Image (tube, rainbow, N blue to C red; front, side):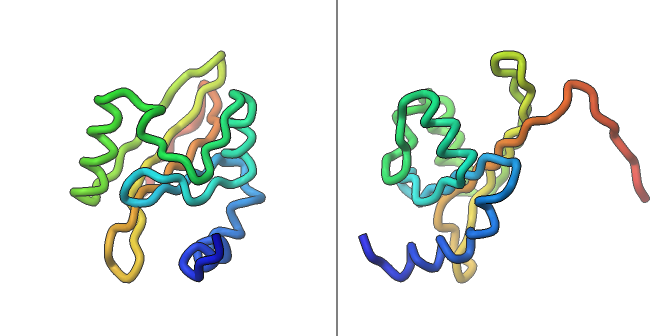
Length: 121
């Protein structure tokens, strides 16, 4: 599927391959258009390949509503989870091109159970 739009995204997100975070990007309909190495590895462990697939069927109706709402209202969702004894922070945000919301990006990172919190001012 050769498309300059996807080529631009791949070039723009090349830095993401070497991070310690799982980064997944979808379009407005929920089709996964980019997964970095960590994101691919996470889903490969579960026996699923998500690139090119719609992520909506993998989510509950409540989560689907949240995703649609974030895209429609250009808002962020952030939370922590504990999965199999590993604590992660999930940060979901719409992404834009030329000022227009084009989908959503999710960044998932492992965090320690206890971590410092600094108040700066």
